[in-house]
Length: 267
Image 1 (tube, rainbow, N blue to C red):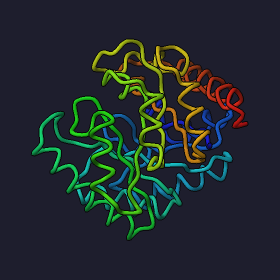
Image 2: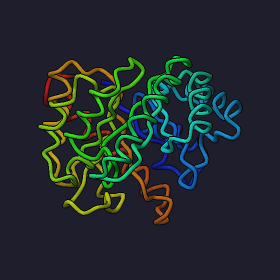
Image 3: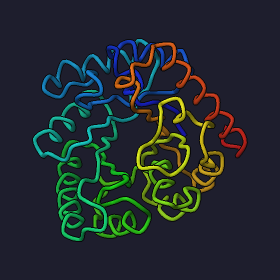
């Protein structure tokens, strides 16, 4: 497994700051955020320049470009994301599922949209991943399994985030085992309680919450998963966290991730 973090953790700073401190924390790579309002890192309206800059920063700081997150399913925006990923050498683009929970009409709309986007991703040599998300059409294991059955494209995969599964009142360790055959990316973070939101940024750091993340990583290892495991912490920009606080969250989680890999014999 390749350990990384989503640059949205450093969303209040420029892209080089995110790369610099991700490398200092000892990560293998980075997921570049293309999330309007949360960061100004991979800016898709200027995707050629920022994709090339991401590639340059990866070389300078010794970080593999593991993924990109662009949450919207707008076809024009997603095509820019796939073009940027192709330019930068980013293999995976993560997006949100859209729709509403337990609403069959929006579930089908989401499946149709994701299927079309997966075909577009294949054209650019990129994998499109989607994760279960609280409140969305795909939000738990049963809806994830339905998506897996409905979308057969080799350019489509599942992005698993244990915090969303936990907040869907499921056991993330059992959930990852059920879908691991199609998992091509992991967004990882901890969570206290089962409220709708992920909680304060510091409590999203691995080891701060209620999720058995050691067991979660063990299941990934036992099933031969060797893809990205990227920390995704949101809220630092909105809550005015300092650069030092963000660095602590990243470094603390890197230690927990390494210990989890060692505990299950993966490193």
